[in-house]
Length: 111
Length: 113
Image (cartoon, rainbow over all chains, first blue to last red; front, side, top):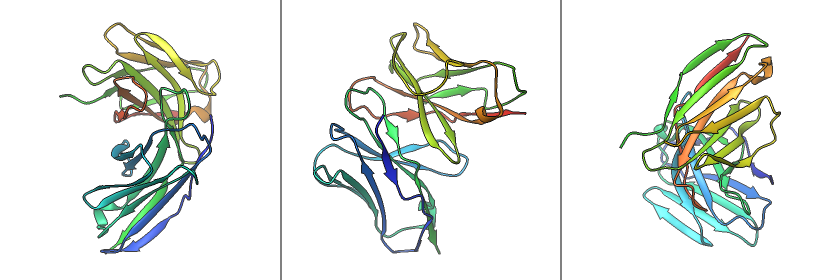
């Protein structure tokens, strides 16, 4: 199992700002990348996934993937207090039929 | 469509005991993965089952075991519990193909005293 690394935070941003969450991975064979959001005391829920280099947008969320740099990020535009949660990055790693997670970045959006 | 169901929601055990956790996947999903989540270590992969066969296993001792039934429901067993086994145990289901998204249950919070 190779590493998926995230800055644990906490990351604090004011309401309405852009929150930028970053993740690096070590397995060059990883093909798929996922962002999960986990509220305190709840289970992770999928918010974005990305397979190809470049950007993928879904509402206020944009996932960015750079396979050459082994870097994936999540941008949250117009951040809301309800976005306050831990964000988990995951990849599929070569030959695996399951996902491997980073330790998560805790985001706090300040009203 | 019902989501992933895990039972029980909470468990309190003492050291040395054993415990069995249950997971019912989303209808039609044939893969069930188990994860252990602790504040310091994050989500750590335990094992994954597909069509009653264990396909992948993480770096956990043999005290942790699992199985999957023909209806895709899965159980996880931990024997000879240790204090360090206290954690949230999450089950996730998927169709089981490569690059698949995982859908998580609410988890079982296990406390070992």
